[in-house]
Amino acid sequence: MSVDYDIVIVGGSLAGRDAALKAVRQRAKVALVEPLFRHDLIQLQAMVEIAKVVGKFNDLTRFGFLNQANGEEKSQISLEKTLLWGSAVAANVSESLSPAFLAGQGVDVIVGSGRFEVEPDLSFVVNNRKLLARNFLLATGSVPVIPNVEGLQKTGFLTLSDIYRVLGSSAPPKSWVILGGTPQSVEIAQSLARLGYEVTFIVNNPYVVSSIDPEIAQLLQAQLEVEGVRVFTQSTVTQVREIEDKKWLQVRDTAVETDEILVAVAEQAFIESLNLAAAGVKYNSRGLSVNKKLQTTNHRIYACGDVIGGYNLPNIANYEAKIAVKNALFFSKNKINYRAIPWGILTQPTLAQVGLTERQAKNRYDKNDILVLRQYFKILVSAQLTDETTGLCKIIVRRNGEILGASLFGAEARESINIIALAISEKIKINKLANLSPVYSSFSEIIEQTAWEWNKQRFENTRRQDFWDSVFYFLRNRI
Image (cartoon, rainbow, N blue to C red; front, side, top):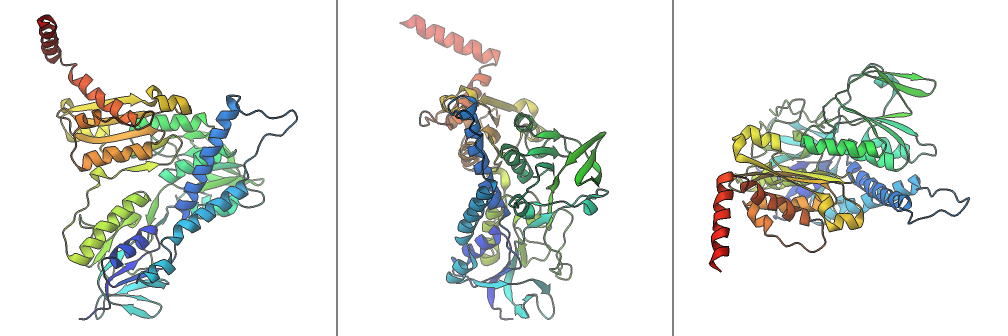
């Protein structure tokens, strides 16, 4: 059987476009099918950056560096202009991987919805075209999971894909309830609070995001509450009603009033119309079932991004796209390994994590072999200068110096975490990080300061202390 393409990518996400560019640069014949493209994350990040500036502005006012003239109204942030700027940024970012750009690189871009057919051969049919390829890649992204709550559908709600339209209206809601659980739900909660809205955040897990280190999660929740976000954890909404143009939610034994509800509990794979069952592709409520090489249960169909489950995190999706494209094009045996892939939540301070948490490490290894290194951002000169002293760096290591993971909550954490991720990837031990000499003053000093804790904890062993006390006593008396 002859085929038209080396790979057909069924996209709709940045990961799909990135995969298409990677494949065509390998001189492969590539088709990219896009039913719908979402760039919510880019708009959200733009909004987060504006909220960060607002936070700084409020700090300057609080410290007395900015004074309002007598009778002058308090400065206001224009939400309309904020959203316009965010849309412009999203458009600029999208342009770098736009259909026109990809077509110029040699990708056959096809806009439309399609489905798999298996007779007489495996193909993907879109716009009455039958696309034949050696292999296929699914990067369709995900859609929100809507919880089954009495009255929610009748009362109405928003998701991240349409929140910007409502915020940009002439009279946006003043109070919000966010049914959260994803990184994006936390980011939007803090951003709305900083922009002057009343925000209530509800999750049914013990922590605001279930997969982060519990100690870091408590700091993140405290930060949200300091900024005015009302947080309910381990809470389930049992009923929603509309009374006199207000929406009411029953949360445990508390009735919560709000203007609008944002649902961001979780995501599910966007695969409804692809006819995957006929193609022999298995999936569950979390997403597509894939092996370590990112093959689905049909070995000619690969998948990457949040369509296979997990959070909607672009860097992880792009990492998966690299592996999937290599395997689909070159029959290689690259296997996915998330051990050294960092991820983060763009709050202020930023949260970033890589590798194992303390709990995961102690479940996997002998507890006596695990050392937990901690250092607080308040010791840094850069933190004092910028008034960003809130934060914690936590590195998990074995006694032999092997780095197992790290969690950071503090300024520039999304940059600093990459150093630790590289160390894990290249099997660099913690003593090497203790020998770093970062630029003074910088937030990356937190890594050096935390790594030094390894030496301190090792010397807490009484025999080791006695040995070095004897050595130094001997050396002093030789002079």
